[in-house]
Image 1 (cartoon, helix red, strand yellow):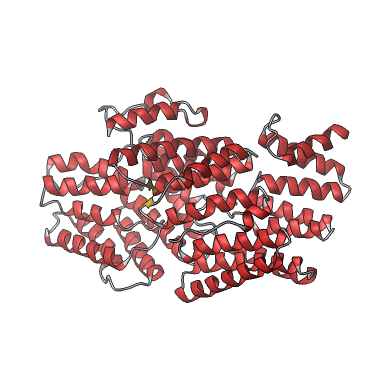
Image 2 (image 1 turned 180 degrees about the horizontal axis):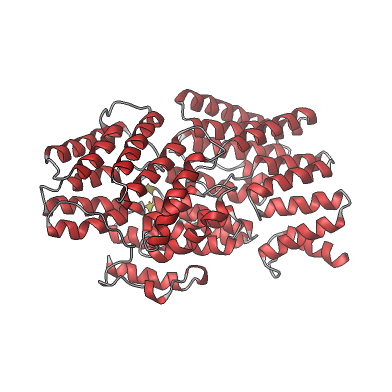
Length: 540
């Protein structure tokens, strides 16, 4: 592993936004730099030496390497019960997606094995028992309720061992996992609670990967993102050997519209993921590479860097499969081509997008949404109606599957596509009603960690629609509201500038045009909208 880590560090250092201070290039023992974790266990001396490394990998969600590390510990010390807890934790993944039944059965066996080894300390027995609250009955599918039970068990463990910092950290992760599994809570009570636990620990342990990582997840929301900037700036320096640690800072950078740093973060992460996949001999792209590529394409588009975004798409089109074909893989394969077509407003190209044969229903819905919008906005009304009908069927299928997040997201897509079809049919009042419903529903939801943001925010589309209806003052208000949640978006800034210009507010139009040029770079000429911005400013 050391060879590819050192290769990657050269990439990391080429990015000013991610450059580490000299003290963080290599670990003191010359091994890969993954951060520092102390997790006492009553195993053999050799196992204890390796356990902190395994937990550090776990905290950075490098599940493949963490599981290998925990299994290696179990081989070195067959009586180490906590090694089996570690294996189960690597397959838990509370912020990614619920485990399937086969995995739950296997992890239940791991934890039963851990119990049978009769851990020597009450603390270890409590860690195992807490995780068993989630895995004890593998046939259960009520993930939200199971997450609540696990959270409650970890809260008791944290209270029982107040000096155990790892108990506090894993309890915070449980809070975040439960929040992820529950309907959106716009007060962000669990996330704020997690952040309040993690912040003082991070001040005391600034090289702990889990603390930086979970703080980013705690604050990955428009109203909280600024609080996560310190953790975002530090995480890549704490664990530069971990591809996911290089990507995670971009969650905060994107929430704040800091595109250059988001680009640097995901370039580094994608390259590290490529190197790792080659080291494993994989014939496809690791899903962590695809994840970084999606975020990278999104950030390039917001800077008006069309050519760079298209290079990401070109690479994607040469990839046959994700390893594994996870929610992350499915999302990236669908989102990247849809993003480029929709964000660039290439309506005929958008109308001709094709879903992958293996696309999940919600991923296929994204493509048919884009096809419907593209067809409606390029005058192909019958094709728009056909794709809307397909989207309706996919929405209904997802409703029956009872997966709330994707059901809600697909409903937002359905409402906004129906709005553009109504507009193409000359039904302006119905179009506005549908688009407002889409915007309100989207505002009531939260972003999933798998996505950098909506392909096109529904409220931004409401601004577009109102501009078409020649109501620029109202359009301006919607663009401004959208920009509060998604700052410095290219089309949001340009839409706000156009709306202000058409409303006769030349001062505000100048402000938004200047923000667009500052965001994209004064010399960027890739998007025609930037020429319009320069012309407006030059004439006034």
